[in-house]
Length: 251
Image (cartoon, rainbow, N blue to C red; front, side):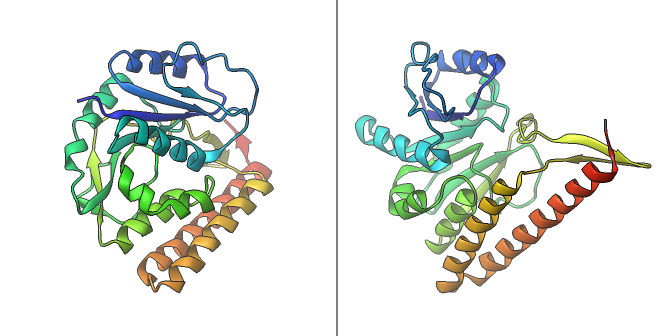
């Protein structure tokens, strides 16, 4: 069965394009290019390609995929962004899992980290299978968010429907390699850090506090507590990154 695959690009390198072309040979690939340029250089090599010339965020790509689903009668699709390493082997393993999406499951996420829990609270968007009808029922989330907190908002919406978010292990799937981590050291301490500019940090806090307020209003206190934990964790991560950059040495 050809399960649709949506991949979001942002200034992709040649290796990424090559791997997608290999996947396209045996998949129903949709490419949404968020690179904010007018050059549509990949429109002739990808069969299903969209680019507006600006960054429409994760939600813009998903909304486009929902429109495609109405034309092609798609029920589910696999979602990846550029932060996750995607190759043909991983796609083939994931597409065989689409049958696990039942009436009580809206999202299945794939990770290489072994975990004893089958049902998980929050997962990231990239490397997940989404149920189209679930996304349509929660279209306001896709209209209200851009990049930050989209994953958490969708998971919380699934919880609110009484549906599980499942976690499956696939060996070799890498959600870290495209994240832009750098290794820094101070004295005998080495750390891989990722720092964000002030504008991006403000966007993170704004989106997550908006989600937190919406969850408190509908009495989702467990999810609210976890969102607070995410916000504190991000603040501490950026504080550590700033400290290493100011006083440390890049390796």
